[in-house]
Image (tube, rainbow, N blue to C red):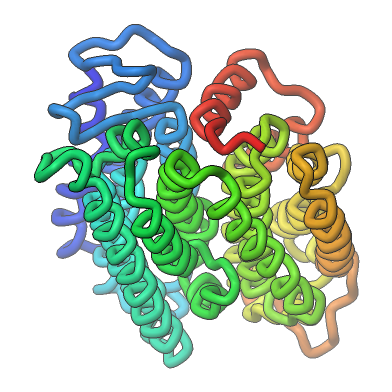
Length: 505
């Protein structure tokens, strides 16, 4: 049964992309919608079945992990959680794409003959993201992440404007160089494992590496983690490897920006965490944890001034992604049950919030004809649905109490203090408070500020109740998460935290 679900996650988008490439208009939308629906439903069912511990049919259960296809695919709670997030954000991006792309084609920003290619690349982007949490082999994991770089770079530059092409090239070059460092880290960890396992087919399997971590060569393991941090840190957007991210996320079509900020950078963090767990098992917690704390704080500090002085709406959201990835790296470095639980929940809430904000931003940019924050004001009157969602979402993203993101930030900071990282936790608290002030300033001006007389709406907002539900529902969940967590959800989050528990402080 689980083998069939894995096949349904990967095959329909792959085949659907081939079919969509040569089509356009309604046919391209239909092909993409059918393929994406099959993949999303299968991904959600598979993720929920693993997290809920439902009976496993047609697969082996090893140490709480579902093993299928002779061990090529191994799904633990952490992988299932990322798969669920990927499927959810992919569904949101797909639902928003027809409306967004139609407007781009009608306005001349996108050629009609490119429409099918957009949907094909979108499907292939999702399938490469979905493969990441399914693969046990660190080499195959690297291949999947490199695939996300190539496919998403083509999507970033799909409008072929000078700015979009520049952003796509920067992303492709820096992303490929960064992932090249990650490949070197993967080879080093393999070199360390062959001394223990010999020329074994599972010498790069994460489940095998974690079990033999104390026997791995410490020097090679240190180098492997440093290269993995530089490589996957580039994909995550950790400072100083972040320079591609604001350009790529701001120039990409908004549904693609939602996937980039909501899932792609989190998937790279997932890969880095796998290396971190092996490093902790072989070296103890100090080495890799201290590096994560340092780069996490640096990312928080560097992103802050760019958020304060930002004039571009989508770049504001992009720099916020750098801030939040820094916070997640910080929490993983802190370790301990409280901080790690905050990290796990924050991953999900950030993915939902950021995806929704980029989709809302896309609506506003099309309606106002500008990405300038000084032009997009008074949105509660000019664009009540998208404007209200974007303004309130920015406040939630900043950590407005008592929302779920406030609760997770609080848990990470307090968890850091509990594990003895008092100074780092205090610095993080100050930076997070300043970031909230910056986002609150921009969010309130978006909703209630006055537009200049030279600003005219590009078109009248449409979309109705369906768009309102699609945009508002994720934010309602984010707001409610700070007040109440259902029992099954709490159990699932704790199962994911247990996978990360080896890092405990």
